[in-house]
Image (cartoon, rainbow, N blue to C red; front, side, top):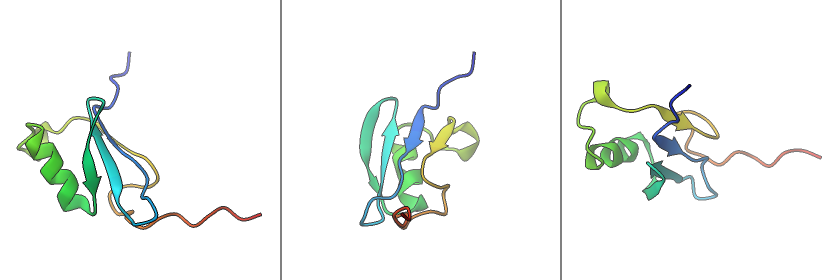
Amino acid sequence: MDEQPRVIIYPPDAQGTRRVRVDGEILGRATGLGDVIEFLRRAGWMDEADWPAIEWRGGGPEAWTPEPPAGP
């Protein structure tokens, strides 16, 4: 059975921020990858080698602007 991601990064909102959820708790909104790293550090993961699985929704770590609306 696959382990569920413990960290979920939601798609960028209209302001370009992304909600960060760890173990079901929203930790805040990230404005860039540095914020995500800080949230992980505060959650107890000090070293990148120890980070849990991260599920990036709406683009990977390079996506910080809202996706344009779908066409007609």
